[in-house]
View (cartoon, rainbow, N blue to C red):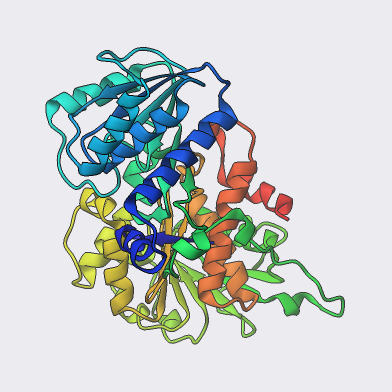
Length: 450
């Protein structure tokens, strides 16, 4: 896991006050980090255009151009005149050694966007918007310095300064960010960063539910009961995913036709049930009989429209997995916010935090291009969400994966983190066309997780 931060200005300040570094030193290391990336990936003599703004992000870009001068065919394009003291100083340095300037943008090997960084909160005028639109049309490998300017520049890679920022993992910026790499600023990240309760998950954080003991039986790995509603297919997908993900026993609870041979069926809840999955294809089935059960529960889909929702929310060991439309409805239902999906997507962390602050007993997974998992004041981002999963039934598989781990007595937060990583990793393993992935393909890929 890696730390995520709302801002890093306070971390920069700590470098000045506690480590006796200067703004100039941090900036030189930022430029040097970008220089190293270019030198590791592009041959000497390659053409580089650095497009700079008026502030310190532009100053980083000017310093980069100075470091590349002579070894690369580098030019500076000033999208705005330099204003900040550091930008003016860096411009003097660049001019002193003869770094070229250009007033036109053209195809090149490397194009660097250093107009504004993550601290910029204003609006771009039409001139800057036009410059960024032109930059996007150029044939070049595109690098964003700290972050894509205004979330308008389509970067192949973002070289971010000091630490990872939460705003870089909103759904509506994912198309712009490209790969994200952190550049050190004069001290190692372990020194620069402070501990954060916002974390970025990595694939190395995934640990499959391997069977390490030999003296076991099917009951050793839990019994998940999946409530069947009006649409049997959704519950069946969840059940099959759970069985494939290590659950010892899986029962479809309700009326079932054409029962898959590997699953069990019962009209009532089996006594040895160790976890419950409810909501997938539920329709208008009454859930009153399940509300008072003291069982770890994964709830999804139609559950968010149930008249008994508020009582369900009082349960302990509860995991909810809404997509944005369902979460917007949920927020309104519990009188926390009346917003549109567009408003949610702009401030996903804000509304997740609002919900988990009120419902401290619940683990929330908000689906999206960057999945957010939260409980109380702990927040985790799974950045491996993919458009392959944008298909009906994918969420039912996720519910089954979470249910399998709950049944195997994983703590709810860990069950959700591990299942979410598994969900995105099996999608990545699928090597067919991105539009062709089906829920059954996801289930078939589960055995490849190691």
